[in-house]
Every structure is written in C-alpha cells, then in structure tokens.
Length: 271
Image (cartoon, rainbow, N blue to C red; front, side, top):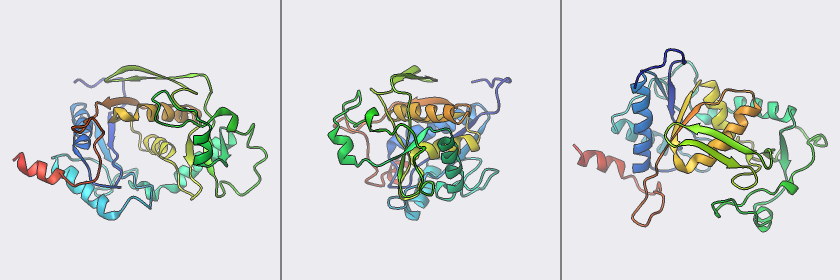
C-alpha cells in the first residue's frame, strides 16, 4: 500500500465505547484500522467514546485499553499517551460539541424535539431494514425561530435532514453507498435533553478536530456514516473516507454482544 504524496498524512482512529467488554468483532475492526494506519505510515488515534455516563464506566475504559494492548496494537495519540488534540475522552469535550450544535442552530438545521419514543413508534414509519422507526417529516416544526428558551435547554434536538434526497459516499472496501432520506434514515438526534451530545454529532466533531481522514468501522454503521456525512456537509467540513468491515456473527447469525470478557482468553490461547 503506497502513500499518495498529494494527500495529507494518513490519520485513522480507534474509538471504542466503554459500555461493556470488547468482543471478536472489535478485534477485527481495530486490527484493520491499525494495519491501515501502519501500512500508510500514518498516525493512529485512540479516542474513548465515553459519552453516556449511565453506561460507560472507568472499569470498562481501563479494561478496553488493556484488551486492545493485548491484541498487540499500539497508537500514537490517546488518553493514556497524550497528543496535540487532547483530551481524548469524549466526556471531556462537551464545549466543542455545544459549539457545533450552536452553528447548526444558527443555520436553522436543527430543532427541539418534543415527541416521545412511543409517539415516534406509533407513527409506524419503519426504515428499509424494517428494524428502526424513522422520525416522520410531518413531526418537525417549520422553523426554530419560535424557540425562546435558553439554548439548548432541556430538550432533545434533531437534525433537519433533506427529505427525499440521496446521501452518497464512497466506501473504500464496499464501493459507492447510497441512502434515501425518508426511507433509510430521517431526522436524527444530535443533542440529548440531559445535556449530552448524541453519538452522531460528537463523532463528527471529534473526527474533524482530530483531523481523522479515514474512519474504519463495522458495516452495521453504514447508515450512521450517511448521517455523519450530512453533518460534515452542514458544518462545511471535509468528509473523511470510510472503510466498513464485515461483521462477525454468532452461531445464530446475530451480532456479537459485549456481555463477557473473552478477549484475554483468546489472546492467551493463541500464544
């Protein structure tokens, strides 16, 4: 794999969520990210995506670092080694997320959401996979101009997606991907009423500010990548490229879960 001199130096990342123990699927994805960064003679950033205080713990975070080190992987920047874009824990980067949220608000691209999960489900608008309920277009307000409370207040905030348009991006592994707004995705959360940035916004803000130019992740996050492309475009930021890895499934064909810490046993048995 040769380095293109016309492109900026490669910057990839590992971004685990410490809400449970890692599994073999993480091994594949993280090893791929590490291999690509080293093949391009680039930098690999370790970012701890510990946004959710109810699910993410310091125990899981420490175990996560230990297990990834146990894979034989290393990184150039991160919460344990420092770097020019610290802090590398999302729980400490709230000011950056709020700044991006304000930029979206000023462009009238987000709005406060007053609908409950029950109301969204009762609308019955399923996505193309038949799994996730989409937020109906008719639920959104015409504008945020009437919002007079202190911003952002104790509201959920949603991104106003371009209904009926295609979101396209090139995936390095899987070729061009295309998703239809209103069928595959719709208005999604960017801010939670408890004052925490939603995953999509925090990921985009951090990938931009940490100068990540390739995102390696599982193919279950293809739609998430499409949402994030919309945010990159809305904020006038250059999108990274994407490389989506195939998923590892269990014996029943289901996604692997974080329920048990199996990685140390796997590493010791392979020696």
